[in-house]
Image 1 (tube, one colour):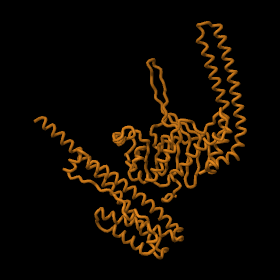
Image 2: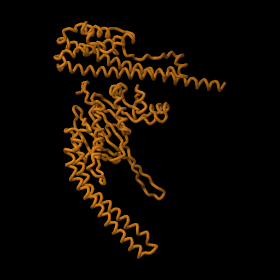
Image 3: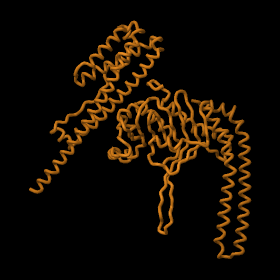
Image 4: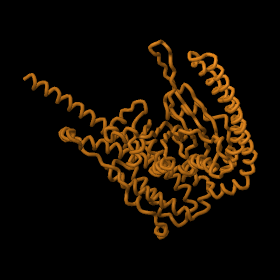
Length: 325
Length: 185
């Protein structure tokens, strides 16, 4: 794994040069946005003054119309101007950073983990009504094939209010990074590891409740009490689940959980491992109003990537001492 | 009288419920044990191939190979108590480890494809056996909880349900392999 020292060198020698024209463009965009803001603001203000002058008290409601139109116009111009920049930033910086970790990795900002693979993992059994994936990274690290991307899956509920209007509400099923890797042991079947909410909240009673989660298969009770406190494991085979979850892998998963400091879900399906790491923020996005020449900004992207690419080492997936090579 | 019959009825239902609960748990233990045995069988099946693959290379460790063949025959012969079987299996595990350890000293052997494949398969089987034993221990734990917890322990005692034994890790397995010692043989 590349260290922060390697990153500093890479930043000085390669990245900085690529960042310079982008920084120039960023400043230009900010001035365009500021000017368009001022122009739109001024036009809206004039129209509002005219309306207020001609319509007296009764017409004040109409002032809202130009304000709303002005805000929409500003939003659209902001979106158009920054979109191109966002794309360029990602291909100049994120792609280079991904290659910096390993030449064999590739990056595609437009695509994501397909919904079919997301569903195969069985981590989130609910069929999503809306599914988005972006910032796809894939490749082979030594012997282990990996791929991950940002994923946002949602389902909708519809309700009708007393006036007969229908409302659609979107609820997030999962938002964050969805990671898939080739596991180092061959196995059949499904083993799912979920954050253990019930046991942490209700203790012994929670454990009893878990046992009756019929949608998930059999509860697998493991020996490691620390692991049991954090996670609930379900699977279709007691022996396979333990074959996958050796005592050392349980420890490694615990370490990884601590390192992320976020809720993680895992599943092992037909010789592959699926990991869902929840994030509230949108990863790998440029910040328009901060300078990009700051090393700390690059460091932040590096840390996000290192955490994910590092899963292969963290879970020791390149250790191929079993018959799967 | 009416209440007496009612209490008796409820008591009967409770006993039937607990009895069935314990039977399910005991069957799970038996089932887990048979899985372990199937996995152990896999290990026995590997031994002749391993002996065959190693024989040509290792000149000084003949005793180890004779020992493992003897142990395999012993494990496969007749009915044994669970403890006796476990002891033999632990000895097999220890001897296999020793064979693998001394094989490190023969570069030709280590490089042979056949041996490498066997080594990986053996690692896999060992990991599966360990998983099988852990699953067995978990089901014994579940069953023992049923047998020992109040008020089920009263009914379990009356109906003859006994606590199950856990798999232990044999002394031989726990020891680190002493290569020097093996060479003296």
